[in-house]
Length: 310
Ligand SMILES: [Cu+2]
Image (tube, rainbow, N blue to C red; front, side, top):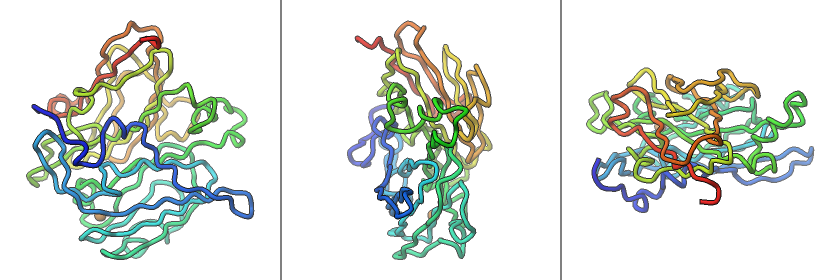
């Protein structure tokens, strides 16, 4: 992978994507609840996934992964979905909702030119995903139709862990010291032979080798991690020279795993990683899939750990 991808032409940048949460438009309902509205459009778009290597993607809002939607536990959600693409598409959310809102054929799967509004409550809190559920499913998945769907816990509902819950609420004072990042592990079958040629975190092979992710060592790191890799049964995340706590699916406020340095996820598995470089010396700390093939084909990056004054 020699050279650089033209992120401007793509219309999305993997560095910006780490913190680019789509929190929608909010308004207060008569009963005091928040109505949160997202607008998502399916768009056919050719994207550059490695220097000079183009992929005819199907996207949500012109980017792969699609927008990282973020809501609060208990919100009423309204997702206005328009299909501007050339194939039938849907948005199937991992979460709790009625059958009518499931994004499968007969329940929100729409033809080109159509619109559908998904309507449901934001629950349970956690690190979730959405993806197109049109058939053939594996084609619509690997074309790029997926994204993160994070529901922050409502601290008032979790008195036993109120501080942990508050730290997860985007924009709260307790959240401010965290360095949060959205990461989606994906891959691309560029010659349509049913196997992947490029692997990545956030679509662009080796993006975070070319532009390491700056980390202030005095502040903890929280990663919302999702695997959507098609054709390979699992993917994984390995952090060098450090260990992390892992919250499977993000649906609990105490860790599922403590002090681990690698976790694996099958397709649609996701979770929250928390770690700190507070006791480390500054430097470049690697992270990557621990399937060597994936690493060598693009799924590798660096944290550029710095003193706060540097
Ligand atoms: Cu689709």
